[in-house]
Image (cartoon, rainbow, N blue to C red; front, side, top):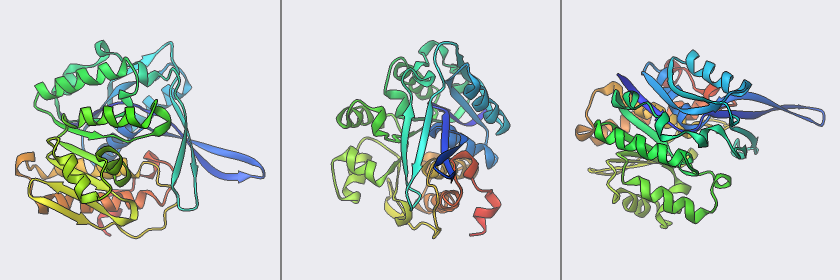
Length: 313
């Protein structure tokens, strides 16, 4: 049985390196939000499986090999003969905040089809995780719908991270409309503070949290960078501060946060119905440590810190 199975994009993050004169240099790193979540779970000792699609090219081969190196099951990964692996180039400001330039027109991940989904992998998973980027185009959206149905039928806990990336949507309004249609399927949702405001239409974060909880969520996690994490569950709302670090690259930090949270939840052995505020704060406490440390290293998956390093903070 898998602790977490995730469906969605896996891609190449080209992260900036120190320039050589006027020449910009980029390092090739494995990335994509669902893959980042799985990599975190797997690195910390959980079992993970990936469902998605890459191109039959050097980048696709690189990504599949990296997943295997991380002990992530790739039997649900599909190789596409016709479409290329998606690429993302990352630029960083002085605070380590990112801007993405995507090369995803006809990207292989958007061509995952319903009949390519391994239902048996989903059926043998405790948690099924998905994001919104598999909802931006067909046939990947229908494939995601199918996977969610199978997850529900098999009693999986469903985790959702909208992970809004403006360049990949036709409009902000379409993104909000689509995301709100899928919140109702989720038990656990992680959003950034900016996403919470955008999706809810409410500027006050606590009011935004309540609006999002009204979709039927069990646990809501709102990350706000160095300002900490607001969470809400049936028992109420709370806050956990971030750790103090000097960030150089925030790429993947939210995914590492969520992957750690899901791992801590699974490791605790407590059912979703029995999770209390003190448990949630414990999970978040570890997650803010790993996410914070990850921002001190460039890249997403390569920046996942050692568990022992995080636990000492």
